[in-house]
Length: 149
Image 1 (cartoon, one colour):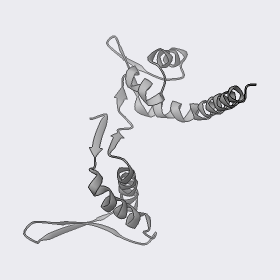
Image 2 (image 1 turned 90 degrees about the vertical axis):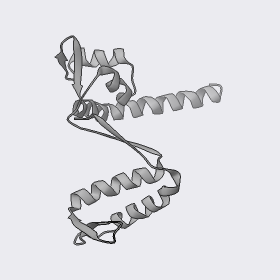
Image 3 (image 1 turned 90 degrees about the horizontal axis):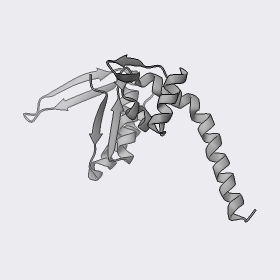
Image 4 (image 1 turned 135 degrees about the horizontal axis):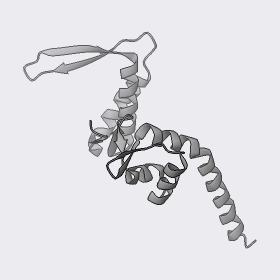
């Protein structure tokens, strides 16, 4: 299974993509979403999309409408400590410390460590308030320095 799938959307297509996201976002709870494919010979095929799938598509379209590239990560995938460091926004040694302390579960594959993406994302969510507090403290410190205090 692929860990990550990347999508890109040229700028000229973003307005139509945003309109599609807007339509899906405005659907009611009882509305049915149908995806239709129109073939070159004029024939069509349609399929009903579940509310959950429509929500996922809406979110993807929304994100693609404002960004040229989008990456979708498989939640059950295993990643390297290097990839985890990138996702967490910390250094590889700090990832290793979290693994060694038990805060970030991993398994060994030969001499290599592998982490579940779901565990990495859970740690990222758990550390978000701490990171926000540190960012706020840094901003306050920068303000004090700028004021000469």
